[in-house]
Length: 204
Image 1 (cartoon, one colour):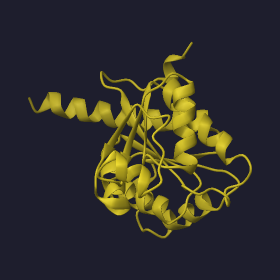
Image 2 (cartoon, helix red, strand yellow):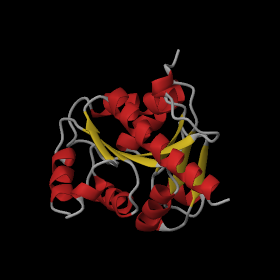
Image 3 (cartoon, helix red, strand yellow):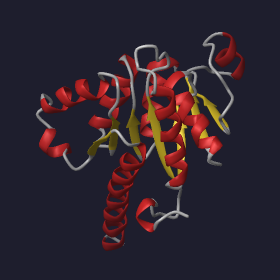
């Protein structure tokens, strides 16, 4: 049974992007377990798990979401399912729907991040940093998962040196607990939605 404080409130399901390394040998022994739990928590918080339709950390989040009975949407860098499998060597399992963007990785990252209400950053490398900077520039709610990797430490430094730390302080949350991270992130999404709807009502 989900407690009211755990649920993201809206008439539309919230789309939560999971960004992380496709190759996770540098991420530590519990990276897969944490990725899976992130996916489960997205479903428990009535969200749609959105990934880059890739391997590694996002793949395990997709698996966790499906194991919890959730819906998973993927955005592929490929233009077709055949190219997705044969050229990019990417999976199709644990996803309910995959959009074949045809924009390769950099273009896919932009569409993926822009299509979501919030972004969760797990263990990652350059592609993950790219998705983080897109979300940061767009002032999206961002949840950064702390773990046995350097990603969260690198991102803390980037935020501090961005000269926008004060501006983004209410949009970025950190936690080593997937549940706590989703609780915090959903509260930010809810506040954003509330302000958007209130503004729309006043301007009608």
